[in-house]
Length: 125
Image: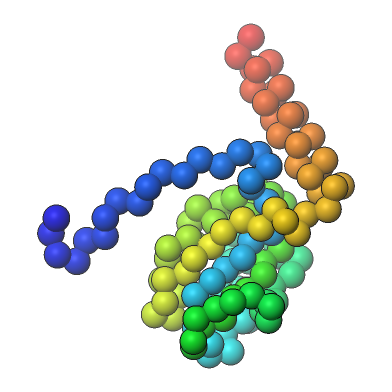
């Protein structure tokens, strides 16, 4: 493998229940750059919340942030584009956080997905 190239990432498949409008962003530099991170993520859709997570374990000189999108599709797109991207010299680690969803959030997410699948099926036939 040539120097300077990353190995291809392993493919990860997410189910509907794994995906979430809540994201956890690790490996953010501890430079007080929460506003810049919020601006970066808000370019993929409106945010409801962007705050540092004090309870999360993180490495020295890095922070962990909690991002809450208003729509799941925006969170899905942001995760796809920003996971493993470089932000102020650090490679971001973006993961879904379905553990923060309420029962109502989960029910809404499943209903939206059901409607999307039904509309695609109707289009085919």
